[in-house]
Length: 315
Image (cartoon, rainbow, N blue to C red; front, side):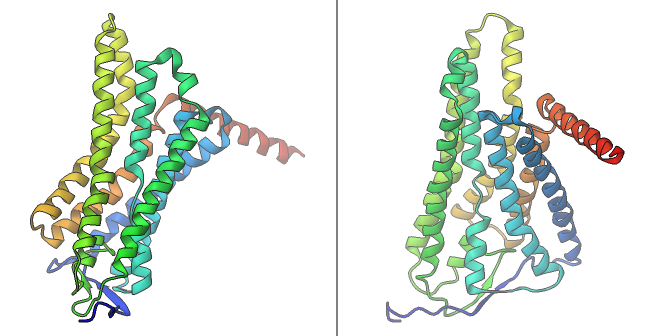
């Protein structure tokens, strides 16, 4: 094959599960979870937007996490439901690359920014408000978006240099990067290296940095004389640690297994389904919607709207 020749299929075929009876019932679960995810994250975004007392650096990162959860779920879930519940398994080549781009999530580095917030709050409490400012958080979040989206653009763009002269069956439930580029019949070494690089940047560096911040936090807490103060300070970190565990543990285990050995397509699909559904559902419940600040804001908004509706009815 000439290096200048590129064979691009008109469509790819998403195989989904293989040899699994009554598999359509499985896709009802992501449908239900998606509805709850939209409601939970949508409510959180609305509350933070409406209540000016939540316009703080901490809740700016929470807003960003809810936004990325909502965008990532919306990019994936409706298409999965259309593909498998209504048996529309063929996806146009350009739509496949678009799907591959938007499914990649930015939660990992948002969790790093949240860890940074906790690190400054506990290790440098007197300087917290001078270090963790709105402009600083905005700059960090914009850099995360720009840098990671640039990497994902390069990764997806490299797919366009491949020739697909054989099978067009992607053994996944969406246009997954690994199963897609492995279908090519020319050299895919650059794509593999790019996939490993993005895996390292998005799923290896963030937990390492988060672990480093918590080591510093543990050292700072060990110097506090009062045991009650140590427990109180650590409690402010527990929700974040739960989010980190829920997001990174299944992600790392699945991707390491896929990179180093063979993982059955059905197992990969189940793992990625849980990875893309459970964290976006639980993030607002664990980190925000149960906190006193957010609950008070919801009550205040409801009370304000209730009074407004009463006044309008009287008029």
